[in-house]
Length: 221
Ligand code: PMT
Image (cartoon, rainbow, N blue to C red; front, side, top):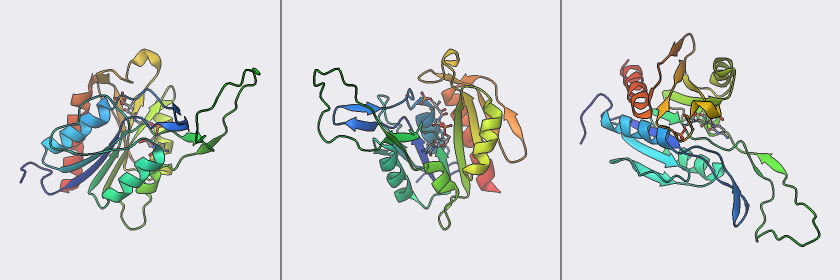
């Protein structure tokens, strides 16, 4: 039993990076720590929602009171996310790898001493946000994605809003000097269908709380 504006509502949040295997000992990944996604799961829980957090490999602690499903690859994250539906709101904060190695080796790739370099051929991963944002039967009432960019942040976010079928995109600049990957602060632009809100730089917990209150207001109407 929980109280709060989101009591009785179900939420799905994705967080963290994905790991895409090259062979059994090596992988392709990115710099996401899971801090922003985990903070959003915690904030939705604090407002009373029943929250499932689908997380890639991270080293931070699980948020209290949240059902945590741990995955490694984008394909596993898609499967775990679809298994959560139906939900009222989905927030896709995970940094999902766009590509994976097409034929990951089943055994460790070895240097054979000849100096010949291996080459990796990549294939596209499924897009979890787009799959859920365009879902024919189980699309959540509210679908929120992120856009992690190193330039043209707003225009790329607007493009993702339409292409991925989201109601909002939280656009953030992840250039190295921003310190967003792994850091405790974030500067978000909330891109909606007809307006963009520029939020001040806040802690990731504050960003999460503000986003949770936007969600509560939207689901209330
Ligand atoms: O984890 P932290 O260290 O706290 O850092 C937070 C963050 C920078 C990871 C986070 O704030 C953020 O921006 N998350 C989204 C990262 C990302 O992958 O952005 P993107 O622009 O590549 O993807 C756009 C959207 O599509 C995202 O909602 C992403 O979850 C989703 N996506 C992308 C590719 C894919 N195959 N499937 C997806 O669902």
